[in-house]
Structure formats: C-alpha cells, structure tokens
Length: 271
Image (tube, rainbow, N blue to C red; front, top):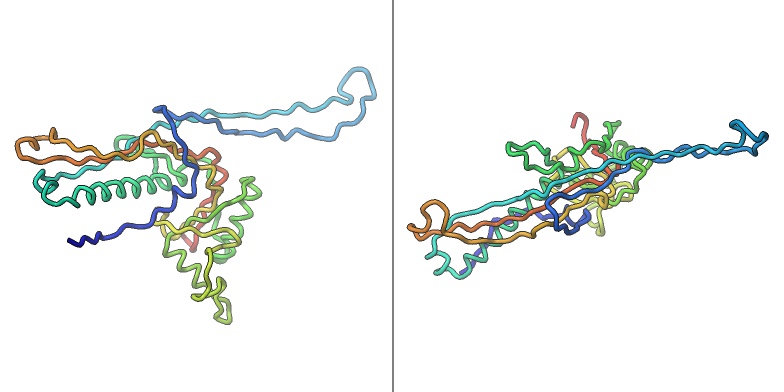
C-alpha cells in the first residue's frame, strides 16, 4: 500500500566540494606550505664582483599529505518472509540505508575529528589544521564581512559559498534595519540567498551558531567504492532463523587541499 518515510534532511555538502575517484586505499596530495616572496627591484651591476646587481633567490616549500580511505557502513536485520511477501520492502530498506550513509558522510566532511574509538573518522574541515578562524565583532553582519576580508587577504582565496545551519539561515533572513525593513528582501523576495554577495547554503551538518565560508573546490572527496548493498544469512544464527542481514557500505577518503581557503565564523557572541 502507501508508504511514507519520516523524511531526512536535504544533503548539500557534496554538491559544493570536488568529487573524484580513486583506485588506491591511500590518497596522496601535496600542499604548499611556503610561497616565493623574495622578488624585489634590482639595480644595474656597478662592479664585476661582489653583491652588486645580484638577483634574489626565491624559495618555496611543500608537504605531502596522506589520507586513508575509510569505510562507512550500517546494516539491519530482516526476515526472508518479509522481503518475499512485501515486494516494496527491499527497495525501501536499500534507500533508507543509502541515505543514512550519505548523512553520516556529510557530518564527517564538516566535523570529523579523526579520533574516534577505532581511529576511522575523517579529519573534517573544521578539524583541519590551518583553517582560518574569525572572531566575533559587533554583530552578525560585521563579523561576516570581516570573515570575507580575512579569507581574501589572509587566505588568498575567493569564496564560493557560505555553509550555515537552517536556524542560522532563518536568523540571517529575518535581519532588519532600524525601520524594520528586511536587509535581504523579506518573504516576497526570491532567488538565491546571499550574504555579502556569496551564496548561502543550508546544512544540518554544521553546528548552529557557526558558519563556514570557503572556496569549496579546495575540499576533495575521493570515491573508492560507491555505496553498495549486500544481503547475507551468515550473521550469527540467522541461517537457522530464516533471517538475513542487509548491509550498506561505502569507502571514501576526504582531504582539504588548501586549509586557508576556509574560515570558521561565529554567528553570535560567544559561539
């Protein structure tokens, strides 16, 4: 008959970042840690020896980063009779498991701390060393504008979007001036939501009270094995109980190739 799921949050993060493929269990990439800054005006040589007219030597440095492929998985039990008698059930189970994988993957991309009990968490954007941090300044709009400047000047990056919690997106939309006029057009205004000219994307993966502004092309997700579904009766005593385990898993690696292309921004005092 009719089946209506509880619903899940919209997934938006993977649409922002760079998605690639890999055939390896470990992804390697190189980050620049120091750039050439030695250029200067050089006068004409006035002697045949010594330092006169010598051009400065430049220098730059790099580091090699390794990000291992991690497995994200979830399974549920089911009876063979249920799967046989309800033709829709298998498809519903598969869909639910895949969506759960995607939600957890999004959480890991943003806030994985790399230090779960089995050491298998991603190192998410907010936990990556070198990501910039903006301090609270006066109010939300002032703080947000200073973050744009910091990313442009300190991070040498051009942001592509803000990522905010839906509750914070609501706060931004409801901002009013002293005459009670909405800064962002009010309820009748359409189009892409923007904050200081850059698109605002909503995601429940980011903690309420904190926004991330960044060039999202500098975060990369490598797909080693796309989400797959397997069914087996070899778990525990499932064979003699006429039960099966439905397992969903994917294998991914994630890395921020330029940490200074992202800045964490508080949206309220003390957050």
